[in-house]
Image (cartoon, rainbow, N blue to C red; front, top):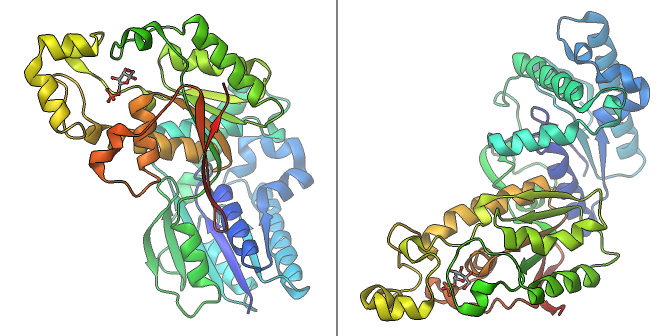
Length: 400
Ligand code: F6P
């Protein structure tokens, strides 16, 4: 039983991340899987020449011929690998036109082909993914701005000829940010179909470290929200956090837009020049509206009805001009989807806040909604979460 999987999608839509996830999930089940990436082959064969946008101009016949050659060479490598004992060969390329997909099916007639199309319309993610692409070796002789311009032009060329899957026999369309299947042509007779479907639609993260920011004056005084800095103790906690993670590769650190979150991440970033750090407002602490900056005791004494209402239904209670935990769920889930997508579902850290981390945890746990606002989120411990096909891990680790 052998299968070709052909990825489909415009550049920067998450095809390679999904291809890697499928490979890892299948390999864990003993199914030998390999990825054949058109882009890597192109870079190997044509290097800097393929950094030019004109290499992707559909009207450039010479470049078109070269790109066809690469595609065919890549397909032959995939076929040879299956002949030699592999089970699933994933062809990671845009495969964005009907003509290319007809050609692929005709060339790889020897075994069934499953097309997996990745879509992603989130402008923030697209922009971040495009910026990341400018680090590719084919742009080595360009400035960041030139690389960006070239990549955007390349994208436009791809878009001008792109057609979504539809007419192909077996296909799945995946929302790459949400890890969910949007549409599909039922392909139950395909080998490994159910396993692949399962891998696509499951949540997946290699290592997520969920940290709360260090201590602030507001924490000491029992005040809500605001944008305070860390206290001396908070800075010490941040230093201890960095020492604890010494030697651990952290390619992505996400913070909120608040100072206390950035300051907690700062010592970690000091020794990691290659780490990508991003502040996402989705991870900003719950907005306490008119109660921002007040002490819990001020709210209790000065606004007894509000205090009572929140004590009665902490999950559903909306601060006047602010938010509730129930409202947080949507924005925090969006932040998590973005963070997971940007980090390629690998290793990432999120430095959040009390209510934010409670909400993040609830997205992984079977919790009653009414329990979410009471989850214990100390400032000297973090959660480590791993969710893959084989391993589901949830641990709390002390660092200070
Ligand atoms: O007290 C720190 C804090 O992060 C506040 O800024 C925020 O309003 C609060 O925790 C959220 O926790 P709770 O929902 O228990 O009040």
